[in-house]
Image (cartoon, rainbow, N blue to C red):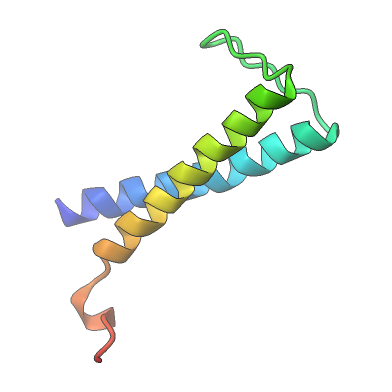
Length: 78
């Protein structure tokens, strides 16, 4: 079970990082992002900011999952 949570954490962290960068590039105007799967076009600045915030939250959640499920031998002694 712990390994599945770690895999999910890595997926969230990786996807969050890549898709956040994609959203930032769309805000700057370097790329045009159009996703037809859910009817999202990311045409307005508000949609692009919401996209970036959503994927930042996903990346942070992935990082938290990784931190919570790190192996016992790597835990720090206080």
